Length: 142
Image (cartoon, one colour):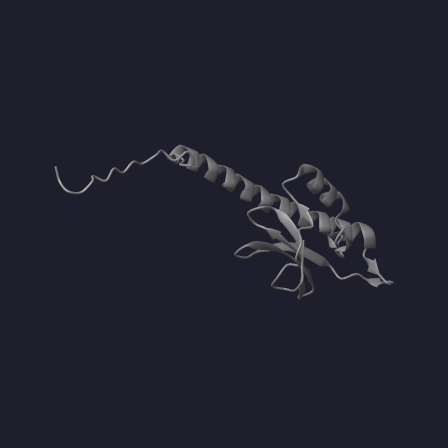
């Protein structure tokens, strides 16, 4: 018998390990959420344009209203909802591409702290699409 004790190594099965099938299913779910977030962001842009048209009827202060366009611009982490009036661009809101959380803009490059809405939650999404205001009043903390 050797003068040293044998080392016994045991590998317990990890209950957190996932199979490739599980990983693929989770990836499909993440991709579906991201596609839905893109669709909901476009729907929010359409709701903002409709709100502007219905509120102003083509006039602002007795003058012809500028034509506002709302469109998403994709960044690394967020969709920026850009408000464009004759080349003058500003960021209306930010939408997280992975989670669908809506943020008020703090600047052209960054969102303000604190989630305002979550597009994955049906009640919040429906309320948001009905009450979205082109001027952004709905984005202030509730």
